[in-house]
Length: 347
Image (cartoon, rainbow, N blue to C red; front, side):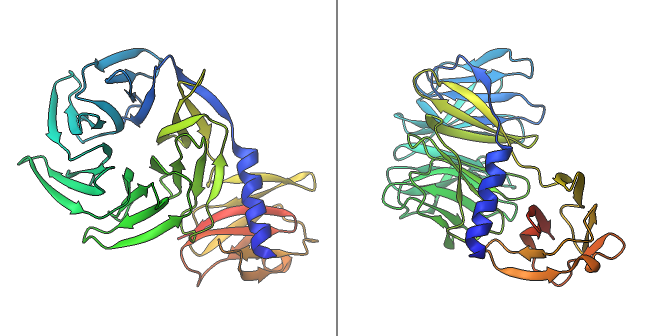
């Protein structure tokens, strides 16, 4: 019952928070996307072998129109070089801001690309089921992991683990540690393609022709993913900037980059008896401040992401405006105050 209630609450958050708007139009077949530190957006144009740069004013510049193949996922290194996994030619290609290209071989259907903290470039081969590691300094390519099923989009998390979208008969998200250990993160995802991680660890998953984007909250357990957005046509590359999720879309009249405002995890207020309940700071460690809570509040309860109640309070437990949250595991929680629910992060 409580788990059903929790999932309903998440659905309410998502439905209320989403605002989908056009960000860039006029791109023939957008695939991978990535932002640089100043807010310039780089877009792979799959059918035209292009990389296009869009500045904050919306001005478009073609970085190259002669890629070695059709770009799938793209990313940037610390020198602002663009790295593209290119299909058809099966190559990993580095493109400077001046458009100069350097290509490295892949066995087949190069798809995902991600760069670790040390500058090593990892790329997935969708057909053979490999993830390879490129040492840029020497040009040496080694097989990092093999035997995967349709590995596609890649992203590194804050711990240095590689998150991989696996399609085909797998249809799941896996995590690979630097030592090569593999664990399932999310299973039963219909056709996962590209990935994006928010700064708080929330994971977003595009599903290509299925037209949806899944959200998997940081600290959640397998099976608690939610369909965050749907009806978007073909969803490809994902990127996050300033708490907004950007998605490359394809389809009739849908060849564009759209943005979706994400739910904030900071100071957040909701209506309550003509006042506003405020819960902060967020993330929190030993306590959260709760303002404008009614003395008549009947139920104050903290749930984990499995829907399990981990702590119950009374209104009188809010001492000097503070609610004590010590001795709890780090992660995401739902604080429910009567009919009002707040998502909080405990560190």
